[in-house]
Length: 363
Image 1 (cartoon, rainbow, N blue to C red):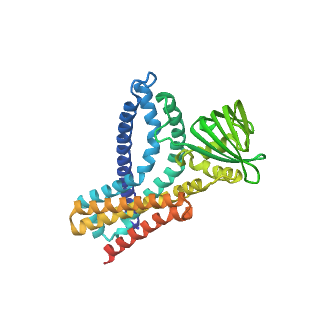
Image 2 (spheres, one colour; image 1 turned 90 degrees about the vertical axis):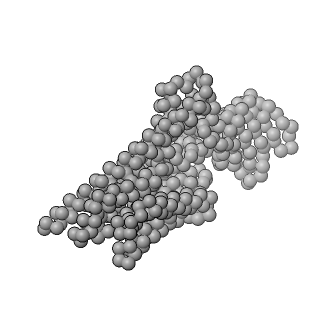
Image 3 (cartoon, rainbow, N blue to C red; image 1 turned 45 degrees about the vertical axis):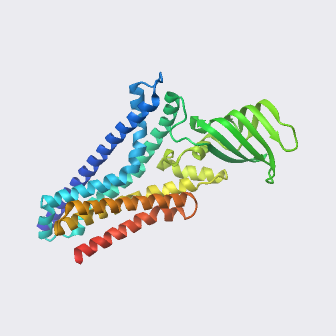
């Protein structure tokens, strides 16, 4: 009975230390990211009249959660390594080992903490980051009077009763409802090219795009200029938003609807399916990071050489992160299935960490 109570006390103690260290590392990363992004935005703002220090700080705060979400695996890795190494240096893990506690028992609380953080990050942090990122894009365009950082041409493919059309826009605002620098390639229902339309801007209205200052180049006809041109569409504002939005701008709870809307409109839902699987696999990825950290801590108090083993843990975690990103790129390109792209790196990382831990524990 006493042993069971002691085991529970130790588990809660190890879990609390792991959670506090991981959150401390995450808070430090958040502060560092905010400061760097704030300085970069100040540089880009230049002499803009609307870009006050308070407005720039507000914009940077809106952008920070999306960046923190990407560095979360490293925060868990460094936090878990810091926890295990600190417990080892204070001989607390040595005492626990001497009392019969195995490596799996003192690693399990940290694994549980990492899993809970992964669930919270997917279900709470991701929707928050997506909402704030959407607001940040509008704020950045207004304050800096230019397209958001890294903005690229936006593409839309649509179907309607008049046939298919491919729309290219230089920039998009109001979540894609307003477009500028628009070029449209229009096709007949049987797939034959019909005309090319160039317009200064386009605005989504009910069942159509309103194109301003349009120049129409049709097959077998002279080019003509029109003050306004209406292009039929089957897309709603929400479908356009999901089509144009970056993966990070669609929250976890909105992804099933975004996938359904894209499929119904005949658009590719691959990137949304990949993002959904990546968010579902995030707890497994964070658990893999904890297992890598555990191999570092166990080797430290048995063989010594903290600097060398910590460096090995950092390299292993970095390699796992790179492999995860590479698999995500392959999945986004449609070369591998989204489930495989999202889950394989995390599962392989967990298996490799468990294998090394088994070898160190049992020889």
